[in-house]
Length: 372
Image (cartoon, rainbow, N blue to C red; front, side, top):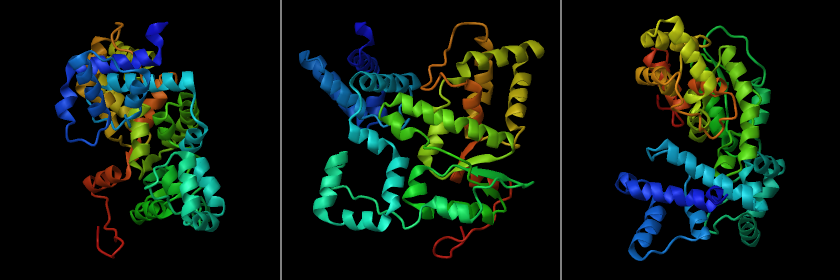
């Protein structure tokens, strides 16, 4: 059907946003490349009636990096759906499929890091490598460390599940810290340990954000299907999931959880609680929070999206209606699993702030020896 074409999906985004225009001013000073292009095409269409062609629509969609600053989650979902549709129809270039697999890049280049680094310092070779994978010639290539984080973690016993009674963290490392900047990952572990927290590095894949941004839905789904059950098992064992990578945090707390509160299985949970509580939404909210906090005694900031009073009241109002739908990017994955991981995933700074609020944060020395 014509309405299902990638171009039609992208054109719908253009029409919806240009009819609203809130983001023209709202994101005027934000580092967003998508909306300036969208409004340029919209203004041209209004001015002389020139409709954007397929290439222009694809280029527009490509400029969205899913930063989440625009207020309409439905539009964010439609942008990704348009991108996925282009990729499903036209495929991804081989060089993009290589670069989107950050774990593969890190492993290959990290096998002989000294040789890789030496070769990338030879300008003709570096230029050829950049051109081959589509990197701008002015971009600097990363220097690969002599040892990846995994080797250090193995020596430190971090890959063995610890038996601990206090706070426990399942550390989701992230690909860049794992393969390119292991000093960041080591520092994260050292800060957590300095605060008396047992650290475990469970089996993990890429968080899926690189493949998500490239429109590779199948790869993203496989990564999520691998990561989410492992992280859920960590949570059930009393571990908080912590990452120092804001991209990984955004993936688990926002992207994968989006739309989950409207999923049939979650709405059925709300409906059952409402029936049991004689419609008292305050009691339903208390039960939801207690259930979420049961494994570790706390939930991350993502819990607000599922436990705030207005959310529970709204879900109660539509519990038996057709309003609201799980239109999240990975709605095919169990919603309760997505909610569970989102509510127990912490970005490192957020986790340390929570420690401080609980009066449990110990002073930690910075790189220069100063107290943090």
